[in-house]
Length: 262
Image (cartoon, rainbow, N blue to C red; front, top):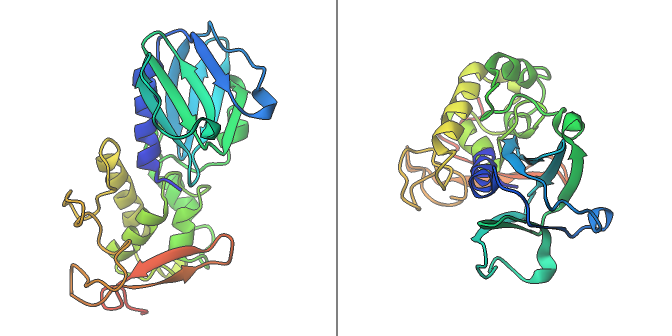
């Protein structure tokens, strides 16, 4: 599932391509919306809410999509050949006179009344990249159950919206605790919340989820995806395992020296 900064970047691309223009072509290729006609409506904006995408249309409608693991939006110039995948993978098309946005393999495509968006995203915690980011509320939610492992608490979008598996692992490393340490035993959760906000903000318009400060492709992260490689800080071999129970278990990475059990 993409990190919140990736979804923010997708929303920015959709907004730049579509906002302010009238839809001259719209095709929602899911059974419940197959006969829906959105042509003639102006696109007002496209925004991210955590890992959800909300494209608001004239007339009080919102197209709500979610990428999950395999979905993506691609933007093309009007008349340009679509090259993001075979036609059978397309779930949504929004076209204006200048641009066309094509949603591939989208697992969630639904049309809502804009006034009812809370039904889709109201359960989310404070959005790390939202204009109403509330660090104190995020900390309160993250601390609510002290028995939950840190990585799982960070991944719970009801606590704070936008952290995925990359950041959950990297934040655990930066806090010098293993990902399974109960939140009630983690020193300075407030610093972790602030670090999460800082990292996603820095990365919101660039690729790579950079946590080391080095944007080179092989230098971006401390531990995530680096199983059996030497720790960048101490040289100890990075270990990997799973945390949680299927199907909600996640792969975790950690340095046993920099992130000791106690």
